[in-house]
Image 1 (tube, one colour):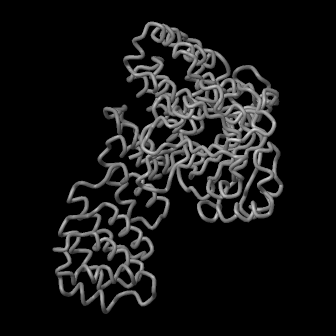
Image 2: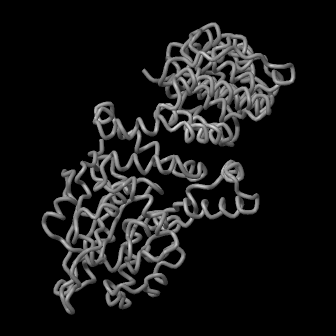
Image 3: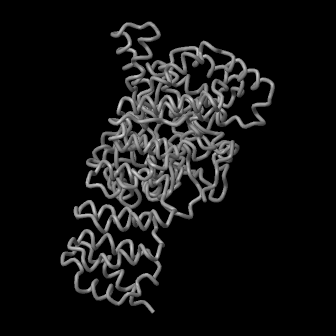
Length: 551
């Protein structure tokens, strides 16, 4: 298990206050090595020790390693971060025993809080050795409800389109955007726009770069064309940190209203309230941060007088409530609509009964528009996974609506037994879409009844479409079948199966089955005589034979 970051793990991060460095003074290269040391060591070998001092900020087995560096008075001129990057949340190691990692939210928190003046106040360069660390692709987009909301609030269609584009750009928050926000005013930030070379590969490229005179560029605060040339073909990118004059600086200040630990929880709730009183389009784009902030307030915190007052003021704001719910009901994506309803309940704007009513309305609306797809089936099936059953009012489908298995599956998710039988039958359908719906449904409502397993196995045995039959057998295997009669039926199917794909699928199910079900000597003979002649599937047949022959 990774060690959780304490509140002080990054207490020293990204301050912008500090004395200028004297000319000729030894530069400090700070390293955060959560994965490979190869990049750091390439720098260390190339840079003369009388001019560059290396400080590894990670202290193995210690959670507050950056806070420790802050207390020690370390001041970095160059920062090297080596770690796999998940595209938005953290730098981490590929070693299963590693405990150290670097959360981006914590980097953002300390960058906004200015809580440790000095550590990174004089940074000239940052090197981010991880995939997608400077990927410019937007992580968020403004969907159609954003523009509709702006029109409802009084904007003309043309203005709404223009503002929606501006909001989309402002809230895109690509990996590059976040690094620019965190490393404010840093002249050169290096990273990768897609897949990055790491470990020995990156170390080797850096060594060649330094052999060509690259050491002169380190710590200069200038973008190095020589370094970019060295990584040609490896998506190396360079940018600079955001400044106060950047058009996105106002957005950074808004982000800091959530992240700045100098602000009290009540002050942060005051900012939340101001957002809720503004454009709902902006609220939608801040939803991730709004959810996280409210979730951070446990029951004890909510009892504190200042927090309780702030929450009460929001709860009593009926005008904001009505505008918010109108936006939520118009959301294009059902998953977003559900999140917005959950957030409304957390604010006290919806009771549990009112939330259920809103969810029922959403489901009925989507069925009425024939808009239900496999993703929404999974969403509806998961709605009560951590709550009491939804217990929505029974729904009736028209003849046309009942013709779409996705609509039927929604009813099955809500507990309709007849609908469940229809969906299970979809697993043996020759229609790929229906089979997908059935698979999604079964991920959330698996078969636990032996009669259902036997009926499904018998239906699979009668199928004539071999492609669909192979898919159905594979799906049956995902259900971890343990019923002896069903497994014996599959054993009987193998010798008569005239499709290699079906045979391979059957072998896959039997390989995970109880060995007692494999005792039929005719199965072993059939595996040898009727196995697929092509290379495809040979390994799994061999594995099944080895399992049968094992003592």
